[in-house]
Image 1 (cartoon, rainbow, N blue to C red):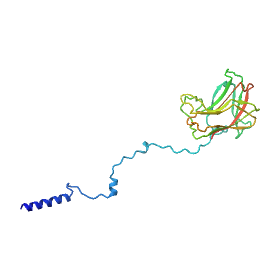
Image 2 (image 1 turned 90 degrees about the vertical axis):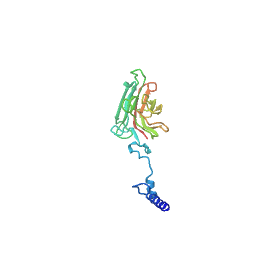
Image 3 (image 1 turned 45 degrees about the horizontal axis):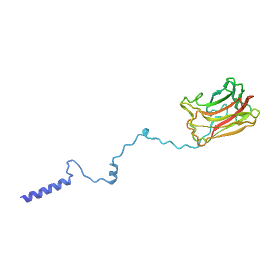
Image 4 (image 1 turned 60 degrees about the vertical axis):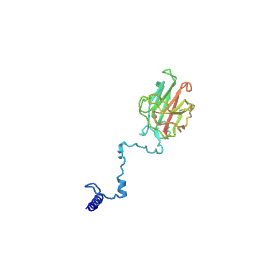
Length: 230
């Protein structure tokens, strides 16, 4: 009798192990591809929360400061009048033999030293009248040069300096570069300011000229045209 009970107990245990040992559970083999799908992974980060890698910048497009009075592509505003600014006469729609297009810029400086500064100049700024107190600028990264055409009324006129950048303040220009002094002829001549290696990410002073009474005791008339970053 005891032997019979032992046999029945063994059969019962084998039957229980075949059923999985837990009531209501079904045992089955899990295919390898299904196992892969059961691996716990980190939830996907919403698109709006992902770090964005900036796209690679393409070739720098020409960025005009002045090409023609009527051009909608002109940038910066000739608002920064300096020194004896009352001795300056400025015309940005002169039809007096422009280099290109229908107009050019004509500047007259009479060297009277009305305000006692004995020099004068004009900054092309963005926005207008921005001397570094406004957190707005043009990012000109990728430009390698600033070019412009210039001529004098008679020849022999001297422009002390022409440059870009150089405005200081809370939100100052990120860099500066220039040329000068320039002795002009009565024929148009192109000049180039090399911008290689310059930090052009925050530019508010796009273009500026300055001269003085010492190099132009009798005053000066000169012309500018086709000013652009390339």
